[in-house]
Image (cartoon, rainbow, N blue to C red; front, side, top):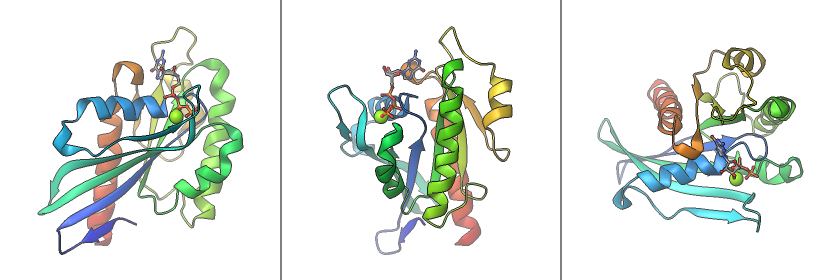
Length: 195
Ligand SMILES: Nc1nc2c(ncn2[C@@H]2O[C@H](COP(=O)(O)OP(=O)(O)OP(=O)(O)O)[C@@H](O)[C@H]2O)c(=O)[nH]1
Ligand SMILES: [Mg+2]
C-alpha cells in the first residue's frame, strides 16, 4: 500500500524487518543508518529498553533514488521480536509494502525462527495481507557465529515461496544492503504492476 504523491512526485514505501528476539533486526537498521549520507536519511528513532531490546519499533526514513521521475522514500521499521510484544508487531504491519525476515542462524534459535515466521503469517493475515504474495526476503543472519545451521538446511526449513535468501553478518554490515535492495526491488516491481 505505497503512498504515491503526484504533487511532490514522491512514492513512500513501508518496509518491516521481522524476526525472533535478538536476531539482528535493529543492527540491520543501525548499519544502514551509519552508511547513508545525511541528506538521504531522516532521523533514526529507536524505542529501546535499557538492555537495548526494541520496545515498540525502530524507524528510519531513507531516500533511495528515483523511479520514472518519482522520488522513492522508504520507511524502515523493525518490530520487537520477543514473544510478548505481539500487539506492537501487529500494529507495525499496518500499511506494509515489503517484509524482511531476519532469521538467527544459531542452531538453538531454529524453533524461534519457525515460530516467528508463523507469527508473521498470522499477523499479516490479520491486516489483510498474505505472506505468499507480499514482497518478501529471507535474511540468514549471524553467519559468523560458530554454532550455526547450514544455509541449505535453513532454506529448507524457513523459505516459504522461492523468496530471495541472503546470508548476512549484520554486525559487520555483510549482506545488509543486498537484503534491503532485494526487497526494494520486489516492492517497486509490485508498484509498476498495480500502478
Ligand atoms: N555475532 C553476531 N552478532 C550479531 C549479528 N547481528 C546482530 N548481532 C548482535 O545480536 C544482538 C541482538 O541484535 P539486535 O539488532 O538488537 O536484535 P533485534 O532483532 O533488534 O532484537 P529485538 O529488538 O529484541 O527483537 C546484539 O548484541 C547484536 O550486536 C551478527 O551478524 N553476528
Ligand atoms: Mg530490535
